[in-house]
Image 1 (cartoon, rainbow, N blue to C red):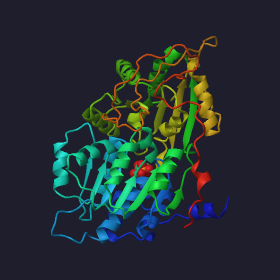
Image 2 (image 1 turned 45 degrees about the horizontal axis):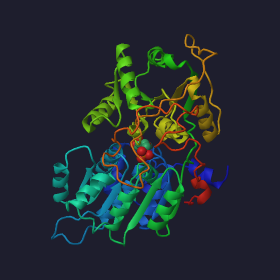
Image 3 (image 1 turned 45 degrees about the vertical axis):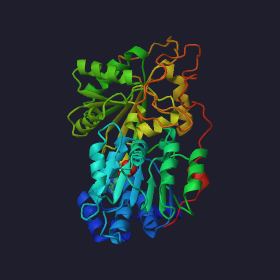
Image 4 (image 1 turned 120 degrees about the vertical axis):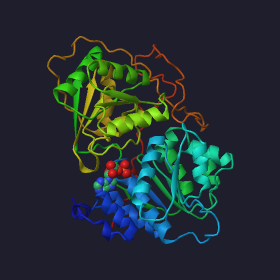
Length: 462
Ligand code: AMP
């Protein structure tokens, strides 16, 4: 509608961003030609060496947005002292293991023609191989905060020569109770450094973190938070509480869906659904906090490789999962935090691909649906599937408290298991008619609206 939209319509090329040949070669080999809007803005900004505050969700291409310029900066200004072991010069912190693994994959992909060395460390797997990898000498370390802090406290990692720090999905890290860990890590870094902070939402806590961390940051905003992507077709299938599973099997079979990411509210619900789908002859695996890291990795790998049709996930486990061109997302249960709806359906329709997100909604979830529609400022189309018409006289029941809440608002005290903590309460508080109104650890469903990043800073022009 204005000058900006004209700029966006003209495709830019990676070669125009000032990246060096080995990095451009890796990008070309990976099959990318044009940077996404966030990349077009963040790459020059990071190359200039200043701090950066970026409002961006997964799906925008933010990972390459910081990985590419970091690789460039480190590879074109090699560390002077070659007599000693390589010092870690860039530290990338992510909230979850899956995201850490994915970011590291990007570092390796784009850095393949540089001589930079990198490693990823996270909890839930053996610490000794990680100690060994660090001991060999690294330029770039990707880590989740908890395991990094363990290694720091054991004296296995030195961060004294960090030149660039990235906080990826900073809002998620705070949601998961990592603020105190992050502060301890920050205290171990040299004062002179470049800081990049990426966050999808901007709560007061994030703003406080950014204020203390960033020095005159460049400000970048791409997709507005809490808005959904137009490339995603969204639909509601009203259905009875007990008919959700047959309806899901019906949808998968009759539409011949081959790769479906299904969200359930609880770990128990995820396990149960996997068993039910398998009985219907649909291959499925679950991914949630009670699964070992090996099981989670295997489920994700098999799903990406199309060896299984359905991956059933809880919200935390699915955070940051990146699957290229995922065609179908199903909300088997609506999330009790409306913002999670946006995060969930963001798994599909990524980087320009078309996707479909359907939600199976029973009478118990009508309040949640209203909250979601209010947040995304649209009324989603309802489509009743023949044979699955909901009972018009059904009465709403309180929703079972989600059992997969992994983090407590525990004054920043570290959650050692990083998303694997045992549920604090297994049964729903029955006294309230408001679903989850008493959930001890969940975010209030009627939380005051998060400050919108677009209200806080203007987009940088190119
Ligand atoms: P991210 O937001 O970093 O998780 O990236 C989202 C998805 O976009 C990933 O599947 C990337 O592989 C893909 N992607 C990132 N940059 C580009 C690009 N310049 N062109 C096409 N796809 C991209």
